[in-house]
Image (cartoon, rainbow, N blue to C red):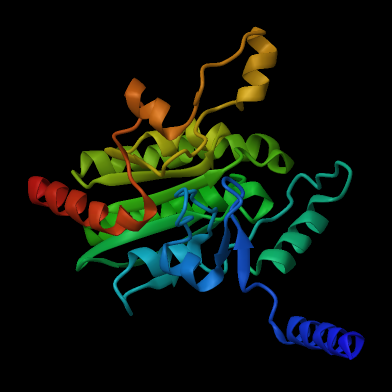
Length: 283
């Protein structure tokens, strides 16, 4: 009888496992807490136990930040070309095709317009899931257009960075985007329109060496990796152990490289306060 009950118990467990949909739970990489997916979403994709900030893409940032029904995406048809016919271990065209398929995104940045607490803004957000959020010609072009849109409509420009740096498959064309994006920010500055830069994990390479660090106000998410070269490369170069927390948001705040470190759940409220203050000053 005990054997029969045990057998049926196993069958019930297996049946329940088959009936439970995948993706209901996720494990925090920082503290190993198992989190119910719905709870994670309600907490803005941060761990309720240790406040670890999971990496998220533009669609989730839009849902967190923008007033309902105000978001309109722009320049959706701008796509990367391959003018250099670049091939490393694989052709660049094949890498792009795979990235489109896996991410269902047009490139490593999404741009658009919408309102945050009633304040209209031009907005851009990088997608780390698309070739590591690498900055190629499309990223530079869409950033430029978003900046020009802010100029034309006299509204602030808010941009969220998450990038491994320049896209090597576009070589010098990629590096040219640093100057291109910096130029439109100069135009915004001359027009007295604020540019707010938000740094997330990771923000490195050519992005950190250009528009990511040119904000009138620079906000970082907690414990985000921010720098030009990664800490491992630096340690190997200087042959010294780096300080604890080097290149993390809190370290950069202490050294004056960022203005605020803001948890994601407080980001919309903080942006609303900053935007209200800056637009009143420039009006």
